[in-house]
Length: 451
Image 1 (cartoon, rainbow, N blue to C red):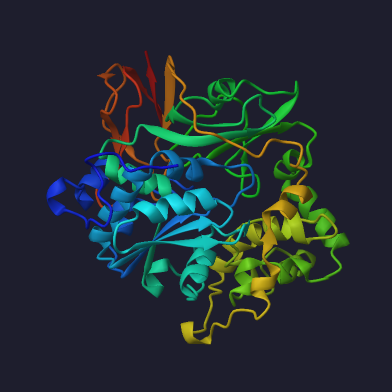
Image 2 (image 1 turned 90 degrees about the vertical axis):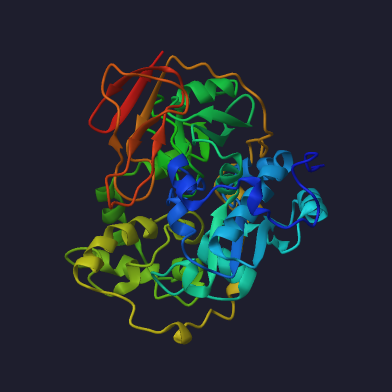
């Protein structure tokens, strides 16, 4: 059970500006970005003045436990960061969206939540963590296609992002869950830039001789090229699976293979569209029509159907009875639709959520079974591990916007927390800080620090 730390948090207390909470300038200086995967600079997001701030603790990807573990063990800095973010955004109300299955977490948060912050229990479904879905579940409002939460008077922030605001330190480490075919599924705090291989070893290593690695959640994952891929500010999960697992094959399938099979096998059953969470919100996204476009010269020829795909992969991984890949067809069609100026022409008032939307939510237990993940332990307790890397690789682009530019040069010595890269003037981006002491080597796309 969580308890507030003595002296730092008082039940019912409002945010005290004299407590030294970070300003927008300070949040930018610290390099804080969306830690849930999007990587959008937090200082820019909080410039929007909105009445409601939603903390996204839905964590709807199978096998991931990072946000739940942070709420369980670090409620105090999370709540202080949420209060600070609310003040900066001018929000009068804060909502914490947590899966209803975590009754202990919900009860503990409700016991210590200050005035103006409440908990909303969310169904255990996928993709509850998509901010469009989350906003609709919490408020009943629909963010318009191509829009942002601020368009419906909301801001959404990840649990770890809010915690980073309260910690008031440069972002040099990242919390993530290591899961799947590992000895000890676990959530760890790791130095940014460390290799995923080192993190997997900290979880006891793989339990199978031949394996692949997915970064992020299994639904929206990116396959890792090798074990030397570095952890970034947005890495929320490292999933190890046997090399022959269907998810490894799916995420590594080449586009030509996807297109060839889809062109000949799709029977237009519409299941992909009928389960699409954005379609159910009333957005003009119809994956089955995107599949039709495979019969034309290039994807996107039909309509705006591909443009507003959120890439949740539910159409591909769950809905399609033929094991086709509507999500990647939508992804391929997006640039074509943009080039042709295809955009949604409606008004927010014209958006009507599907009347069956609530009844087509995909339960997590069914998704885990469908994905063949039932054999793996669905747990990830937060644990301490003393990482002592000899080298870290810090990509200059690990956030939304433009890549940062190095402010150090090869041969310089840096200490933990030193600034090593910053956005160019006038460009959207985020600062990057050293995650260990050492000597710097500056490359075209990354800064390497070696002890």
